[in-house]
Image (tube, rainbow, N blue to C red; front, side):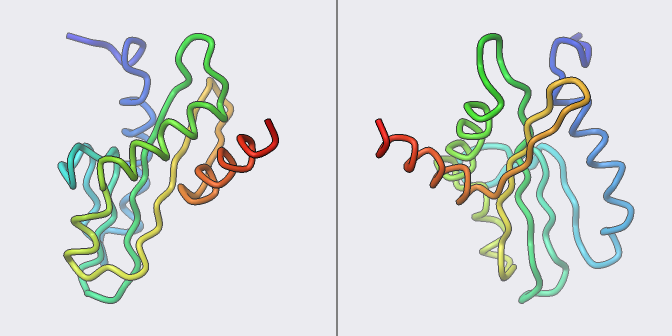
Length: 126
């Protein structure tokens, strides 16, 4: 059995899922839900079509990886694996795609589009 120390994302995902109580009346909030071509860490699917949905991917930087690199990897994962597919199919609009990176008590959060465009800007400056 793995402990949160071996898979720290589970600890953060548990924290986020505890916050779901504020959302459950109007939304179906799921953790580690299969969507698209993988499993999103957290999906917030509105019970009523036309309401906003949220994809949230959580990461902890790997050894030698910066928070920005982890944000970019998470953003690419969200897009490559099409985590928003279930929400779009359910009629959620708009769908907010977010990535969060945790390192101890520090956290970084970005919209997927911002994380990906920041990577493109960084490449054009090289």
